[in-house]
Image (cartoon, rainbow, N blue to C red; front, top):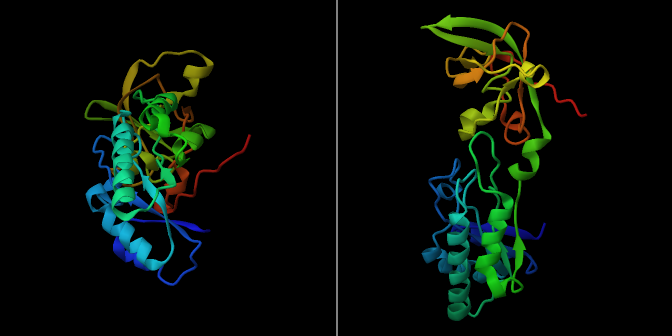
Length: 267
């Protein structure tokens, strides 16, 4: 491992005295409150303050290699990619002019969205923006990206069973054997809501004609997967299916209430 990322002087100073072939990227902050996870609230330095961090990197004796950013996960627009890349290119020019240091690498991060229930920008739309902003400069840099959800989401389909049903305040509730403390942890941690269908809708073509609440099996009243969600008539033992469950689901699940992890079966 020879490439690392820092976003403040304290982190940069940790590389003092380390081998000179280590390369450092300075992470920039480009806030995106529209994203489900705005990672610039926790990480990154404002572009206006990035020169100081670059100076600290250079002072340690390791190599400054370039910049990275992450515009947030599950953002509904390609605009933040355009703004972040333009801002980075402006900073590249400034650092070259003031410090005489070239930028070799630009890491555009990840966060490439997946369409769960609401439409999201396609990877092609994001790529078109990146290509448009770089223009004739596209060959000046080594461009890195960190696709995570985009690669993993559709590799897993979750099957759960109805283990209970009740009417509460005139509303029908179905309790499943997995919930937000388990594989549906993305509902709680990311405010991401995967599609949910009854197996009977797929196999038998029955329609979803009831508005129900789908809840998990734990004792916590917060363990609710979906409210006012259209489903066909369900009985105990009926199977409910959620595709696109390969990212930030089982990996962030807990063993709350002593419920074991949902078994993963490779097919």
